[in-house]
Every structure is written in C-alpha cells, then in structure tokens.
Image (cartoon, rainbow, N blue to C red; front, side, top):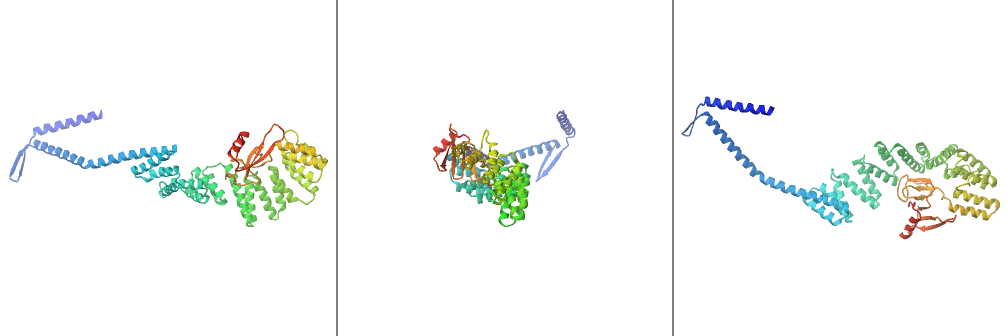
Length: 474
C-alpha cells in the first residue's frame, strides 16, 4: 500500500511540474562564438536530459570493456579452484582407500591448481606416508608446523611418526609443543602424560595430571590413583638420594589417596624403618593388611620382626593375621609359620578349614609339605601336588591391557607400556610373561600339563593356543 501511494505521489508531482512548465514556457538564449540559440526552457531541460542519458550509456560501455579481462581472469581462477578442490577431495578419498598412486596424483594436481600450501600440505604428507616415504612426509609436517594456522596438524603428524619409530625423546618434545598449542585436547594431554611416565619424569607428569583433572578429562578417583603412583615413584627417587623425610611425606600422601595401593604401603614401611621408626613401620604394614592382605606385606612384616625363633615368628604371624582373620592370605601366613615351627596340628587345622570346595594351588602345596613333614607320606603329598596343578595359578601382577604377568608391580607395563594397568589377581590359564609364553593345557584328568614355549614360537603354535583358550590376553 505504501509503495502504491508513493508511486501516485511521484506521478502527481511530475504531472504538476509538466503543467506548470507548459503554462510558463519561458525562453532561453545562448550566445557562444558568434552563434545564437533561442529555445524554450522546457526544450533545454529535455536536451540536458538526453545528453546525460547518452553520457551514462557511454560510461557503462567503457566500464564493461575495462572489466572484461578481469572477469575472464576470475572465471579462469574459479574453474581452477573448482578443479583443485575436486582433486583435493579425490585425494582424501584415495588416502582413506589406501590407493597410493591416486592419492599422489591428486595431491600434485591439487597443489598445482590451488597453489595454497595450507590446503594441500596435509594431503601431500598423507600421500607420502601412504607410499612409504616417511622422510618426505616429515618434511611436509615440518613445513606445516611453521605455519601458525597449521602448526598443530604439523606437530601431530611428526608426533605420530616419532611414536611409530619408537623415538620417545623426540615424541615427548613434540607432545609438549602440541600441549602448548592445544592444552584442552584429550589425546594431547593423555599422550604427553603417557610419554612423561614412560620416561620417568614423575614431577612433570604430576603437572600434566593436574591439567587433565582441571579440564575434567579424567575423574577425581582416577586422578587420585594416578597421583598416588606418581608420589610413590618420586619417593623412590628421594630415598635413593637419602632424602628420607621428604620421601615419607610423599608416601603418606600416596597411601591417603589410594589406601589399597600395596606398593606405597610397603615403601612407606621401609622408609619408616630406614628412618629408625620401626614401630611406625610395623603399624603401617598392619593397617595395610587390615585394608587388603597381600603376600608381600606378610613377607615384609615377618622379615621386619624376625628374631630367628620359629615360635616367636608364629606369634608375629598370629598378630598380623588377626587384623584380617577370614582372608585366605591370613591362613597361608599362619600355616607357613606353623610348618616352620613344626606345629603340625595347628598347621593342619588352619589348612583343613580351606580344603573344602575349590582349593588354591598354594593351599595344595602347603598340604603336600605338611603330609611329607609330619607323616613322611609321599603318596598323599604327591596327590596334593597333583591336585595343585589343576588349581588356579598363583596370583600375580597382571596387565589389564595385554595380559602380561609380572612378579613385581611396575608403574608402566614392560610389555605394552600401559600406565597403571597391573592388578593383583589370578592370571588366565594361558598368559604371556616376559621372555616366554606359559601355557597350561586343560585335560579331562585332574592334572594338567605345563609347557614352556619360547616367545619366538611359530605363528601356527600361537593360533593353536588361541583356539585352546579363547581368553588368551597376550
């Protein structure tokens, strides 16, 4: 409605102007160089309007002629750009498909057409990696890392190469740079932390752990567990330097953060003893036993209180076992002490309470020792030993990531480099230990056959083992 009204107003004004000019035609005289031109005012306005229109048309024509080369150049660039992006897309698809020739051809074509390194460097690097030319790929990644807009991609590419080559030192430096560029990226912080613990840089790893927790990349419980391990490892270094008091402070913190972390409790007890505080050392082990019995705690406690008298050692064993009487480890501790003191009746009573139902291999071996020592009954001792071979394997530190078994706890798995992956549990009947693959073949008979197979065994043997035990974790 507004537009119609506006149009009508303009028409009315134009008509009014035309009528007024018709009523007042006036006259105009122009004299120039001896010439004289007489005309009405209306004709003069029409002449001026015509000249202006012709001038405008000529100006438009001149602009068009002037811009034609620019339009032609831009059209050519646009065609090249479209072809370049098409080549870039085909190249990325070829990389994903593993087509080396196609990826390399399209990478070169995209580089020639686009002439924009930030867009084509990544494709060129991936094509070089696909063709096995890691040196060329490294050059591309290095060039990318020098460009602010592509620095992170370049550093990530070099980091992946360094990790694939096993160059932990170079990978650590690159991970530190990546962390400075993108500190809130999950894989960056996690990779940096893993490399720091692998290199034994416990203090630096603690700083990275703080960042992980602050950015909520790990939960509080996991952060506490990791920090306990880091404190434990830092304390080991301090003890080696003779800084016992500082080590004790860190170990106390580790035990508070992870009460069931047995290595920290053992290390704290050893530090207390080294510092001349035997009573605190014993209390530390007793509290650890109360939280969760472990054979290493029993061994350390008995060694600490050993007076060379088997009967006194029985009292020591009974004291420690009293903090967690119903646990099997307490029964094993007591039975071992009774056997050494030749208290056959007490040993038999303690073990008999554990021989109903599923019996562990350790109980079987102690029963065999008891039959041999008390009654010199080789037959019964042999039966117990035979039964032990069919029982579960003895508990050990087993890696949850690869299934590797260690006799002693380690912060990083020696087989797969996983951090804090070891737990104290009964291994599978087939498991991989350092240097050899220990396999227990199940049979219909109560006994089982234990075979030691060298780690360089043939692939055929490995396949057979996998078929025999689907739970093989190595």
